[in-house]
Image (cartoon, rainbow, N blue to C red):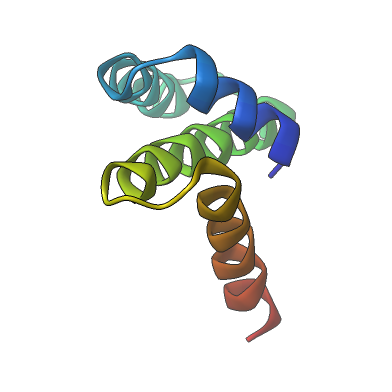
Length: 82
């Protein structure tokens, strides 16, 4: 998870575009011959896209974008710590 990447995706892409990208990456992850290293990259991209989508949802409910990004980061790091 990279906050600058999440911020970039949030600012430069609509949720519909992010959803399509997520679907493509999920499909790619199921392809035969995808290496473990490629799966790691796909996983990182999926995490960043999901973060941007969550930031879109939080801002749609009235939260400022910087606060929404911080909320997502705390949520992810909190789940890792458990």
